[in-house]
Length: 96
Image (cartoon, rainbow, N blue to C red; front, side):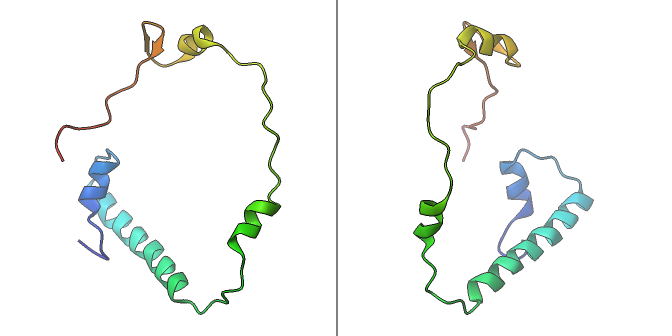
């Protein structure tokens, strides 16, 4: 485990089968990324920035109803469907 993370655990959570070379590469890259976040967290930045201002000034599109595909069309283009519903693989394991 390096830099406070376990690459094997992260790979398992992401359902990735990584080679040893990929684990080494991704560990190095993730350590670098986390280092940048640490540097930002430690930076002496002015506290006068109003975080909420960004949301208030953002240009959001209006939420207006429009045409939709409908359930039959959606299930027809889905990778897998059963009984009029989209079928997806199980993503939660019984083990912790």
